[in-house]
Amino acid sequence: MKRSVSIILVSAMTAALLFGCGKSASSDTGSSSIDEPIPQTATSSAAATSSASAASTDSEKPPKDGMVRSDVTNEWVDEAVNKQRPLAVMYPINKEAQPQYGLDRVGVFYEIMEEDNMSRQMGIIQDYSGLDRIGNIRSIRDYFVYLGLEWDPIFIHFGGPVVYVHDILTRSDVDNINGTGDTSGPDYGAFYRVPKSGVAVEHTAYTDSDHITAAIKKAGFEVDHRSEYYVSPHFTFAGASDPNTLSDYSDAVDAKEIDMAGCYPTSKSALSYNAEDKLYYKTIYGEPQKDAESGNQLAFANVLIEKCYYEVRDEKGYLAFQMHDTTKDGWFLTQGKMIHVTWKKEGDYKPTTFYDDNGKEITLNTGKTMWFVIQDDKTFTVDGKTYNEGSTNTKTGV
Image (tube, rainbow, N blue to C red; front, side, top):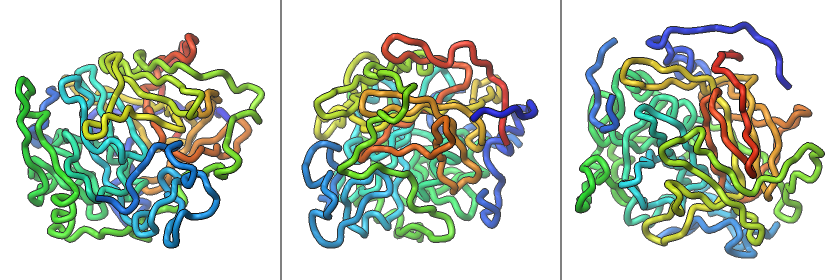
């Protein structure tokens, strides 16, 4: 699957041009930890459930009329929910910001490094109706936008480094609700503070489904997926009666304990596999990562690890990730096994597609997906064995 390509190095301040695909929607559209912008210099009808929570989730027949398989999780949802543009919500991973609201509804959860040796998370929430609180919410980075656009979402964030996010967030095809209300976008009255004793103010910004619905209407954003942008289906899923156990791969390895501390040294994100329900349970700082409302620990049927070329942009430590590429490695974990994959993304709205070493697109299992984007020279361990060891940060691909 690997092929040689020329090595291309770019200057840090022009990285946005490399890592995105330009400003025009007519093409394939294609420091500090605080959330204040830096100066410019250049009750639900289809509430999300655990993947193993009900037999009807795995049935081949809809539980009731008007339900379809979700593009995000392959679980049954109302057709109206599947047609609706999801939210892409920026969640901080700081210890003092835990636990957080709305995580039970996240269908795909991303974690990527940012500056100050800290990572950040973005949750794709397909059905956000009936949520009394979402957040807390923090700032965005441009590579989260380039990654998230393939879901045709509405981005929910609280500011960001204007010099790096302004161009992408103000593109005519990109819709965002911005808590700081700076030049990267208005807040549309969507946010409020919930102070908490001993917690810094940047960890106190929240919203909810009513505020979001009102803000989307005020902004004039389209509620349903835009046919000129959204590509459906997004993932290839295994049939409910025939899950992908990775038994077809002779090189599949056991994958029960996943330690991502080499990639995320502060949060020390990790996953442990439960053979009874066939889910991976997430921890941060050595403790279960939970939804603040339900107390449920985050659990995933699928885990994707996407290796990316990156650069340090400036003296503040802001990073840039190349989210469009065609030759980079990755790993896919499900049902207690792991295989090597490669990935390809060729446009902002083109889905990131993962392929096995035979060149065939991988098949995910019904349920939620944890998606780690890692710096291409960092390591992680699975069942005590280190992976990506000896790698170097060299740009390949487009």
